[in-house]
Length: 351
Image (cartoon, rainbow, N blue to C red; front, side):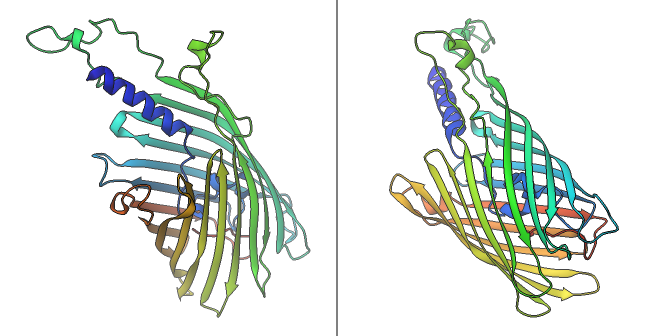
C-alpha cells in the first residue's frame, strides 16, 4: 500500500504540473499575475494585493489552495506633465498547494513595465511589460513509510528499508511578456484590452529530467506556454453607477477557458470613496466532452477609501467532469492603493 501511495503521489503531482496554471476568478484583482503590462498602471504611487483561493473543500480533507502576494510601484518621467510617460516595477509571489499529497509550487517574479501616453490629456496609454523569476515545485515524502521499515514491534524506522526515491524537488527559470491598451476618457466608454504570454521559454519541469538525461528513454515534461487576451469596458450610466462588461480568454496546451460577464460598481459615499461592487460571469472550459459551461462565479466587493475587498464563489455546473457539489471554490482578495491620485495614471479594473 505504501508503494502504491507513492506512485499515486507522483502521478498526481505530475498531473497537477501538466494541468492549466492556477487562475483567479477575480482575475483583475491581481493584475500583475494577469498581465505584466499592468505593473505600475494605477492612480497612485504603490499598490499591494493579496489573493487567496480555496477549492474542492467537500472533496478533499484539506482544500486545494492558491495564495498570492503582489506589490508594484508607479513612477512618472515628468510628474509635472499630465501627458507624461511612466514606468512601473514590482514583485509577485505565488504559492499553489495540494496538501492531500504534499505537493507545492512556489513562484517568485520581478515585474517591469513602460507606459506610453498617447494623447495630451493622458487618457490613452499603451503599456509593455515583462516578468522574470523562478518556479520551484516539490512533493513531500515525510509521511511515507514502507513495509520493510517496520521493526516488528514498535513501528517504522525511517530509511531502514533503503528505498531509492526519485528526486522530489525541481526548480526552473521562467518569464512572461504582456501588452495592454487603456483608454479612459472623461466622457464615453472606457476600454482596457491586452494580451499576454506566460512561460515564454516553455521550461522543463519534470522531476525525472535530470536523472534520466542521456538515457535511452528520457523523461521530460515541458510547461506549456499560456496565451491570454481580455477586453473590459467601463460604462458610466450615471454619476454613481458604473458597469464593466468583460471577457477573458486563455489557452494553455490542450486547455482553454473563457470568462464572460459583468461587474457593477455602485458609489455609496462620494466623500469617503465608499462603493459596492456586484458581479457575475460564466466560465467556459474545454473538457473530454468538448468546450462548454464549467461554472458560474458570483462576486461581492467593497471599496472604502484606498482599500478594496472582494469575495467570490464558483459554482460548478458541468456534471460530466465532477459532481457540482465538489466544484465549489471560495476566493478572497484585498488590495491597497498608496498615495492615490484622483487624476494620475489610468486605473485598471478592480476585480
